[in-house]
Length: 331
Image (cartoon, rainbow, N blue to C red; front, side, top):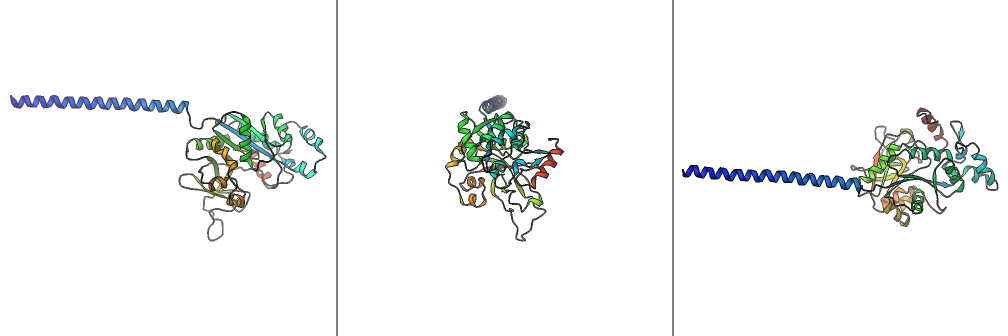
């Protein structure tokens, strides 16, 4: 009897323990589910860096490609917009200026800006797209094809500073600014979205950009900026020279060199302090504004994309752009 009684008591105790364990598991699952739901709710309504504006900086003056606005792309001068009278309306009233400055000094060209703006408008991540310029002729032409324009000062030293001034004048709060180069008429909306998502997913970065595979024929071209990244996808360095550069002094046809694309996004808090950062030695030597970010110890996230095109930097680029535009039926 004693043994039976003892066994019964032990069995009851085991059952109670199992009951508590089951209740604990159920409670734990419920708490985890509630926490997960709360986290999902938070992410939905308080998305990190969720408000995004795309800015296309366009300045007056060009150094690398004289005559660029009048070069023919698919039979039309790049200065020409959809309205064939723009050339007369914009250029003729300004005949007293230096003819070289007047005809060959507008960068990027109007047609490039129009195409870039149209492509940027297709990006799902952008809440707004504007052109930022210091020149009324560019502004007038952009307004004609429907773009919103923010006038900025001539003192901006680069596109990043122009983006910062435009952001201040917009008068709206944004978390991310995407700097979209105006001479990238074949920019893909998916690349814009990718750069934005990369910055949203990297809270330790203040800057994000994109690279693609470098073609062997562009390896030694100083107008094609190269990039190297670490194993976590953060930028190590940018250069106009070939990087990495091996001891043979030749291009390694098997190495996956990276070409930097003309699109980058910034956390707006960082963008506001960027103009106050002093120019850095590497930035000045390479003439690359991204290096000022790295030299000051900030992190830059880099994504690799499949992209065949690049901007119109030299006369030799025109034929390449024309070919790509025909292939993609963008004429």
